[in-house]
Length: 322
Image (cartoon, rainbow, N blue to C red):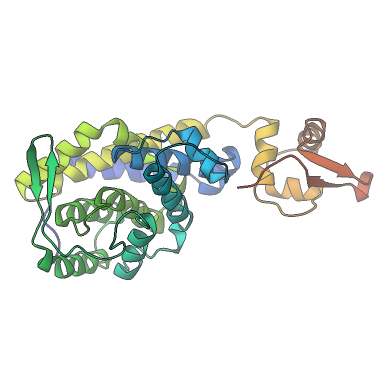
């Protein structure tokens, strides 16, 4: 059975706008034009999602942990970040319509933080905001059935993926299936759902915009609770996605310089490579531009050149690959 919501004119307009913007973004070009964007997105996403839950670590500290460096901070906050790094690293392995994978993701992201990570709650819970109870979740005995129904809905191919991602996010938050970690799981699983149909969402830290608009995020959840349908939440999330796509389109419109282009290539290459390998990756550039990029890379000690003319080869010497 489809969870209740109304297809408002605002939702229809947002879907049209989001779909158009997704169509303007070629994920391969985005990856080439924005070296390191995948890593940057992951850092921003982790920082934003955990920040909403009260984590105090900065983007710089999260970057350090991602690079296996030592960080000083609350043990719980560090554990949350390490768990998130490991979980987001495996996003492409999760099947969005698999309840088993959903529980695996919760076990991964809450490992060492709660006793029953990866298992549904076995007691009643309420969401408290300030001095008042914002939401009383359904009885714990109903959770397995409600979640099974929700995953059944995800398997409905007649429903638009953009809508499904928002509806799942809201309904999961309403059911509140876990003792802890529901917020971060709702946001993570919406990303998993979206990535299944639109790979560009790997480069889209829309959780940063949720963090910046926390008040509106919670208001849309509350409004949907009061109405008994997810309409308001769908409108909010689609507007966030639209804004995030706008920002990514602006990033894409900036042409990369020589160093950025070379570093984007080096993130994909293994071992030695030639100028022709470089030009094959960037088919739109000239021979002169390719030679200039590689010469610049040698001068700033990112790569080392060996051989001469037809035997010329390059290898990485100054780039830490993540």
